[in-house]
Length: 247
Length: 315
Figure 1 (cartoon, each protein chain N blue to C red):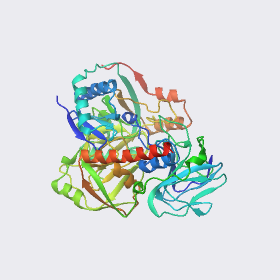
Figure 2: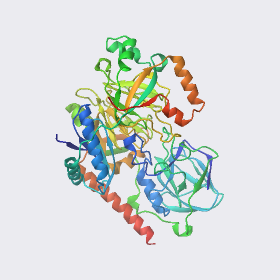
Figure 3: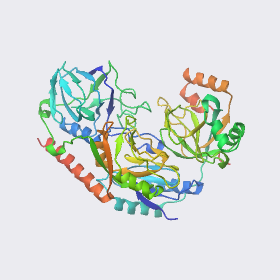
Figure 4: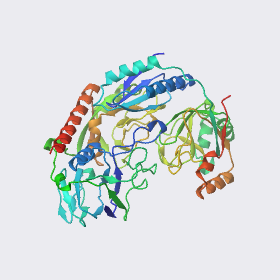
């Protein structure tokens, strides 16, 4: 498997591992990042692993692009495969449709399904957290059925509420805080994926498995109210979580 | 100590950003015009990455509760100290009880106020930068409000720090037209030949839908070969995203760490501070350069900052 280097401006290098969502590529990227952690390179600031690539950021006055490519090539040769460790399973209750999921009907319509079928298909699998990104605490999940794949909005919405569950192409994810965004919103969870007053502020981490459990609107409102009354951070985190090894 | 009498449009505490946590999705934030912040800090004898105030467009009213040395760099928003005009890009003394206000924008969008000793706010993940959407850093993760009191660090020999200026060539000029140099990619192949031609030959206008997260431009649409969506990928400072409707969005300090729109090019690092000073209506054109040339320019800027730093230390 050969990697591909591309400049991202004068301060970044995109190290590409193959342009598809694939658990095998994900493990290669994890192993590359592990090796990067073990091998400090002067001038390198940090890196961001994504589905298909690792983007390495550097000080443009400290190291030259070509020199850094060579060092990263050496890291690729040295890296060792990762082993699957115990995996956390995190369950997120979700109210689908209505005011909480304005795009549920659209996603159903574009795929020739009923909204109920979309809910069943979306809440069926366990999703792998491939990467964290976009904004603090946002998990990029793999494993969604192609039956409910739907393209992003042409023009992103200026505001998506925190907790919104969305679909973009064949990806699904949850918005941890209110931001603009172009994902199709099909529901919302009362669980906080990002809470700046909690330690750690980010709930999920790469490698976790996530399951969505459909709940009625009443249950959502009750959980949301409990949250707004100030549930202890620890209770909040443990709510709906279950630790077990991956089958 | 500095008391905030009026906060202005958007005044935040910023340093050079919260790096090292992007892999968890933590946004970098930091000064939009990192060049002006660094020069300002050097003029008042601080480390380059010390926290200062980023003052946007309509400035605040601030009262100094003790003697201080300050420098204002970046945009000219018409600063007045006790009603008298004060110079930019120069360290100046301020006496206890004096008030700094701004009569209105003259050139540029963002002024940096650096104070000898720096602005003291809690360190969050290695940075004092305010990240507004994430509600962390700076003053309780938000913009300044009336009544806020900012602690400043102790700094010895204040008198020695007065009257410093950078070489005139280090002082940028902000105009109505801005040519941004970019390095193509990483998804340049996602665009039609015509789309690429449009991007490099048309001129675009900065819209009012621009903020610390990104600059949205208006102008001719850039066409895609087969859609604007990609599998989500990292977003760098200066990444030029083209969503399906075809108008460029240039991602800035509060950009999300990753995203799923095609990126036609990336603005080079020395041009980002200049973009940060461009207000709505500014005409933007794009010019392709290579990585080597961009790194030469970054080195040149770094050398100028180092010469300024050494010159000040040896005084």
